[in-house]
Amino acid sequence: MIRFDSMAEADDGRRRASGTRAGAIRSGRRRQLLPGLASAASLLGGLLAFALAAGAAGTASADGSATRAPAPEGAELYIISPGDGDTVSNPVTVRFGLRGMGVAPAGVERPGTGHHHLLIDTELPAVDEPLPSIPGKVLHFGGGQTETTLELPPGRHTLQLVLGDHNHVPHDPPVVSKRITITVEE
Image 1 (cartoon, rainbow, N blue to C red):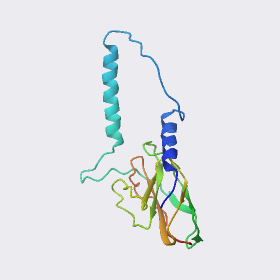
Image 2 (cartoon, rainbow, N blue to C red):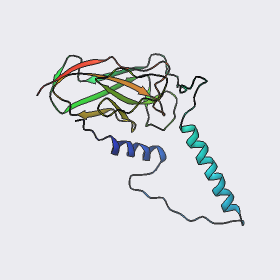
Image 3 (cartoon, helix red, strand yellow):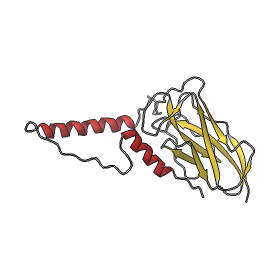
């Protein structure tokens, strides 16, 4: 069983990115200045929303793979703790480290930023498409989180981080941590 509080933190990250506060509700009344202007504004708003949604979905290259954001030279992703070879007990807190880039929530497109994905007991997936979400194997931290707490079964486990862009696609070149091995005691 894996336990972490990413949904609330991811939701909070989206609110920060959109400029709203947790629990805030935006309301207001539209004044109609000229007849038909409100419907034209509504149509333009709908078209803009569609264009933004299409852009957020990412673009594909001629071979069907996702377009990858460039990674700055020297960017480094690493696991602060636990250390490689450590023996730990549940719950296991994993802290993420990043140098040469910034952390931004999923959906927020800023050059030189990304968000973390934690691979547990699995190989690095294809780097030319969005990272899959596989419960217990590939965990997404789209709220910009830099640590998590897990419940892992007793035994040996591998952990590795991959940085994804706003669309969960690894950068070019991929920013990947060293794969570490830990042992979880009963």
